[in-house]
Length: 190
Image (tube, rainbow, N blue to C red; front, side, top):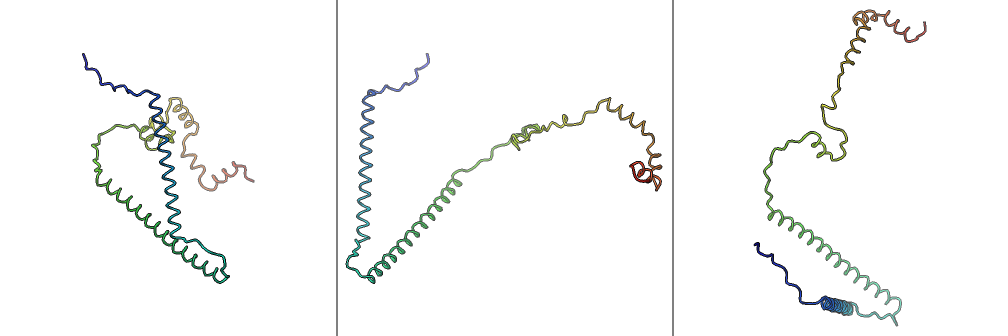
């Protein structure tokens, strides 16, 4: 007899108990997410309270308001420069991380060239592999050759017999008389 395959022990928790535990876990996770979100908002408000004291516009004349606007504009420029610098650092660090990851992959993964074996491939299969389904024509060279039938040979011999000796025809057409005959035969004016 073959040994019995190990079976997983049945779970001793009922389905309704599993469902209630799942619900409790999900509600707890939702509560923790909401608490984390509220803590982030409080931190943001605290940070902005430190960095940006409340502005007092009442009782300021036009010159003081213009000075205040210039100060705020200068602070915005400083913050923009810091943000740009931080973004540039992040982009540079990401690029460095990607380059290091590629180096690690190159060092860790030594590619071993597999031993190649000879494979006989027909011309059709080779064309299909090279060009995919775009190649409609067959590369069967024997099928593409013109087939010569015995009837065609007989017809060619009969045509050659009608023409006669080609040398006589060439001698007759040479010189001005031959050209005049060709011109007259083509329907030229006499």
